[in-house]
Image (cartoon, rainbow, N blue to C red; front, side):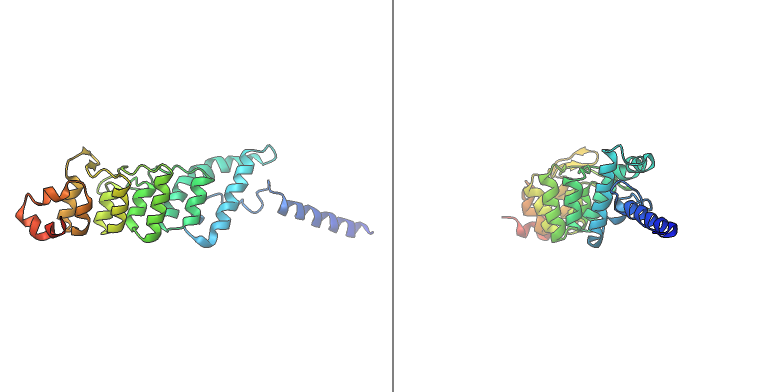
Length: 227
């Protein structure tokens, strides 16, 4: 074998090792972020690949110091934002992966209004978001968490957005209808539902029908659904 051929083979061999070595950053150097791929079901494999790469880096001495540092400063802090984005886009597989495997904080407040993943789900309120909400609640989501005004609790958000089925789900799972950003106020959610003319949800709010019956105007607008 000539010297040139031997050199070419050695070069190809070294490149092949770089590509398949799970500890190299060759394929990942461009982006260590989880949130940039958390919203799209089509990029679920990329989300998993980035996490598993960093998981290996953080638990191995074979990973470069630069990769390890980026995993610590980008991937780990980014996982909570990734969860909120996955919830917002109803990317269920990403939500399950980020909670079960990545261990994202299920109650982490994110964004301008410091919304938890459950509050984000309540804003959209679709059937997919309801299933995600049930998963979040079963895994320890604080059902009474509050955000920054004008956003309030998940329950208030669901009523505001007319997501009645989502509001029912929250109430079935023990949402407190008196919780507000500034503390507890009796009848708070009930009066909000009356104000928003959300008659359908009123019978499901504890003691709300008795509050409705105190005012003839409320009875005319919403009381017909009360027993």
